[in-house]
Structures are given as C-alpha cells and as structure tokens.
Image (cartoon, rainbow, N blue to C red; front, top):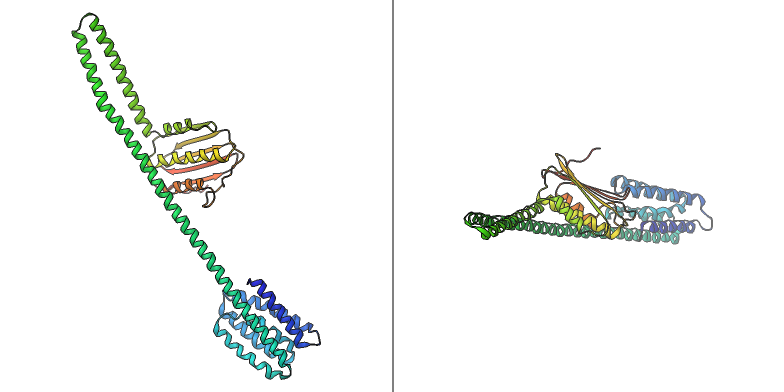
Length: 372
C-alpha cells in the first residue's frame, strides 16, 4: 500500500474514533488537536531516516502526553494510531505497554477504548504493509538498475569486441594491400626492368625491322612498368591515406551529395583511421535513415594536439536523439564508445542541421576538456 493512502486511512480512523469517544458530542477541539498531532507525527516520520533518535524521543513524548491529556478529554486518545504507526522497530513497541493504562483511567469507556486498540492495530498493520511495499519497490528498482547496468556492460563489451574485430580486419586488409604492393614492386617491377634492359641490349645489336620491333617492345615494356608503378603507388597510398578512404566512402554514398575536406599535417594511426571511417559511415547511414538532408559536409583536420572531425547535414528532421545515451540511438552510442576508447570527446547538436563534432588525440593521450 502506498504511504499517502495508508496515512489518509489512519487519519480517518482517528477522527472516527474521536467521534465515538465523545459521543453524542461532536469533539471539534479534539479533532483540531488530532489534526495538529497528525502534522507533527508526519514531520516526525520524515525525520526517522535522518535523525532516528530524535524521532524516537518525539514519539515517546507524544505518546505519554496524549495518554495524560486523554484523561481529561478521552477523545484525544483517538490520536494514538497516528503515533503508533510511526513506530519503526520492535523495541519501539515496548512503549505500547503504556496504553494498557487506558481502561484503568476511564473504565466506563471500555468499549470505546477497545475501538482505540482496534484502530491502533489497523494503523500498525497499514504502516508495516506500507513499509514492506516500499522495501519491495526499492528492491525492484535496485534489481532493475542492476539488470540495466549488466545489460549496458554486456552491450559495451560486445561492441568493444566487435570494434576490435573490425580494427583487426581493417589492419589485416591494409597489411595485405601493402604486401601485394610490395610483391608487385619487387617481383613484377624488377622483372619488367630486367626485360627492358635485355630488350635495349638486343636493340643495339639488331638491324632493320627487328630493331624497330624491339624498340616498340621496349616502349611497351616501359609503359607497362610505369603502369605497375602507378598502381603500386595508388594501392599503397590508398591503404594509408584517410583522405582517399573518405573519398571512397563518398563515392559509394548515393543518398545525397557528400563534400569532403581534409587538412592534415600527418596521417592518423590505424586505430584513429578506423574510428574516423566507422564514425563517418555511421553518420552517413543515420542521415540516410532519419534525415531529409540534401547535403553532408565532412571536415577532418589536425593541430599539434588532436584531430578534429566535423560532420554536418542540413536536414530539418532527425529521429535520432541529440545525446548518445544507451537505449536511445544505438548508432550515436557506438560513436561515443569509439571516441571514449581513444580518449577523445564528442559533441552532438541539432542547430542548423545535425552536427557531430569529435576530437581525437594526436599522440594517443586523452584530449583535455574544453574550458571555453
């Protein structure tokens, strides 16, 4: 039972008991006194968690004072349920022994005093039921919080494992590209160079049409070598360049135009490279799913401390929440998790479109908080 409802029932019982004790007179002064006592008792119940000893002494003073005052005006005994409902622990109930003196103080009101005892019993039952309800409610919310925390922890661990697997896969792809580029350069390139030298030597010794044919063959081999060198350079540059990777991402995005701007004095490490690409992919996917934007701008630059990534679309509709909280937009939560793993900062707003601003450390150290 909720505390407010139980308190209302106890107050109503006290007032009815006061009418019974004063019958046939309507006890107006006693009812006013009982309502005043109800206010003091309610105030005392608020103090039980903060100052339990003070609340205990107040309850005992109210109890003794009410028993004495009831000797002169028995209707005041109807306020006893308001006191006993605040008795919290078993030792406090020893004070109820004092109420056994009521029949001896007014033996002619034995039936009315029995009604007082009944009202006190109901008050104690309601108070204990309310306390049990509150304990169960607190236990429920504690369990719910624990389950939510465990779920968040598991989701974070799962996401971290997925991120690590993605990073490992990206690193393997980059390593394989570099290996292929190196093998092409070392094997095919060297063999083409050797073939060009051999053709040049044969061209010097040849005469007539044979010499012309060898000259054309040499030109073809030199052109092939140049193509191989260009392909190897592009393959190696693509595996290392975040600018090239972002432009590849932009070419494969068809929802709306994407404009890339990079101003970098040094390429990010593999973890930052992978995080930037993953965040940009997630942001573009969110724009396609939730926004009515017709333009997305991605800016990446760095200073001597950090990389700054800014992603802006001009949409006026955005279904994702403006703060990456668990249980809301999982894409934004994943972005925040990636940024936190690298010791960076993320800020999301919906002013003039949807904006994501991210700072990532340049040297692997956490980015200091902005004080401005």
